[in-house]
Every structure is written in C-alpha cells, then in structure tokens.
Image 1: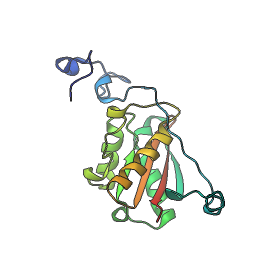
Image 2: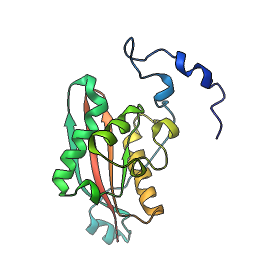
Image 3: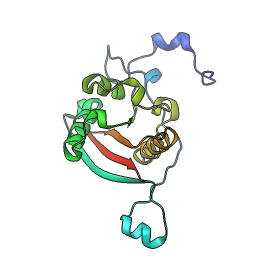
Amino acid sequence: MSSPPKARPDKIPTLKPAFREGGTVTAANSSSISDGAAALLLMRQSEARRRGLKPLAVFHAHAAFADQPGLFPTAPIGAIQRLLGKTGWTLDDVDLFEINEAFAVVPLVAMRELDIPHDKVNVNGGACALGHPIGASGARIIVTLLAALQHRQLKRGIAAICIGGGEATAVAVEIFD
C-alpha cells in the first residue's frame, strides 16, 4: 500500500497540532473528511417477514453517553459501558467492535480503558484508512461491522461513534440466523 500522492512521511513529525499548542492530534493521525454513503433499512422482524425480506441482523440495544465537550474522544467508552449494561453482554460476548476513528486516539483509548483486544477492533481499518463521510459515518460503521461479522462468520458486534460536544452513541447488533 502506498501513501496518498501528497503524503510526505518525513514531514509527519513537523506537523502542527490541530487543537492546542503541544497537542498530539495532527493531520497525520486524524481521519480525512471524505465522500461516502451507507444505507440501512430498519424495520420490525414481523414487517420484514411480511415483505418477504431476510433480515441481516438484529439491533439489540443502543446507548448514548455525554461528557465534557473536550472529552469527546473518550465518550465512546461510556456509551459502550452503558450498552453492555442494557444488553447484559460482557466484552467477551462481543466478537467485533467498530469504533469510529475520527482521530486515531478514539479507538486506542477505548481499547486501553476497556481492555478490548486490538484484533477485535476496526478489523478492516478505521476512518483514518477508510475516510470519514460526515453525515454517513454512523451508518458506515454499522455496515462495515456487519460485513466484517459476516465475512468472519461471527455473530455479535458493537459499533460506537463519538459526536461533537462530548457525546457518543453505541449500538449492539447480532447477525440474524
């Protein structure tokens, strides 16, 4: 895999911090805003049956969490913890996680604080690799998670995304039998 045409790896150490002097978030460890689309069709199982559609997955629960605006990178941790409480799942019950990577630190801090193995998070690359289609990112991470679960013949997943203002949301999904 090659670098983007204008990328200069030798310049990475000299990039200016994005948010504050001495900070560590730079253009090199942030996702790029990109074009993209994802679609979800949500309905009751009975409605899918009535229409002759085979559900791909079941949404078990969703959860939201809010903290101080500057702490948005850690907000997915609280959303995931609330979600686990709602589902009764443990971290070990979850096969894969898709944690939106607006900045590289977001999934990294969640993995560290929740003790999630790296090989269970963003297995196809996060937003730093795939792009961050603002407005479609929530749907994109769910579609990416469902595809990864199917491809690996796994069942349960959690998708989480931080939102400006210190908020985050998370959903628990399970591939439908």
